[in-house]
Image (cartoon, rainbow, N blue to C red):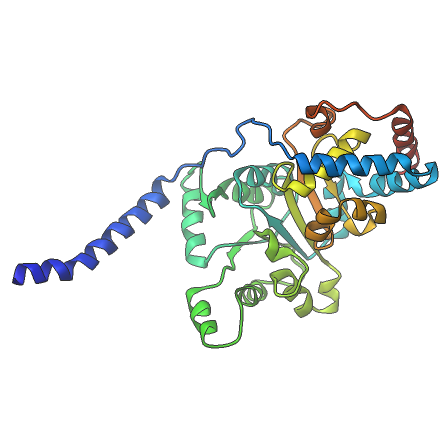
Length: 338
């Protein structure tokens, strides 16, 4: 009987040891997840339909209206390199980058953003103790360092190569903050905002890298709290950015179909100022506007094809290229819009 009682009492301790051992093994020997796409094509029939309908409406416009749509695209759809030059010139104090936690997104950001843009304070979706473990792995030379099931190590290494003095902070809600708000008014994103301001330094360039919705300019999310709490000077030096892969969000595929067909943005591109897009584009791509364009100042799109490889979604669908008239209009606009 005594032996049975001891076994029963010891069982919870055994479970704790096993769970702790598993967590330690995952932290030390974790491997990168398999790529979701592995080169396979993703079919979005609804996106193709929306893209075709937009193209049909574009073709039916009067030449002057077509040119107005094209001019808005030419002025705001730019290469990542040109966008980064614009960012450096603007000297923003706070950039909130909303991502989907996937390996392709992190790889793109490491190579095409953090490797080329000097960051002084990088704020990540991790608690301080978790960030310490991450930084140890990076310092030990671990090739794969997971944060939310995608590698963060390459981003940290790129940020440090660009600026060896970069300060990295984890601003995720702590356990104490979580317990406190269970018995009082508050939210996770309010906690994130408080943690951000604790690590804010006037005059420095801050980049927040978080799940996409946290960077949306909407009530209840981190970026809106930061804008509301910032001084007037800080508020005008803020931008929120969403980063999407061409297959990560179906409404985006509809716009890509349209752009591919008329011959704009064949590779990675940036809609640098979503507010400058022509109203007809917002109408034709209403779901993308509702979910992304109206929520973020900037949309960064990365693609599988190398720059200059031509249209992708339209080509894959076996569609005919843009008409001669459309190509001529695009060429004419590119000549007059810097």
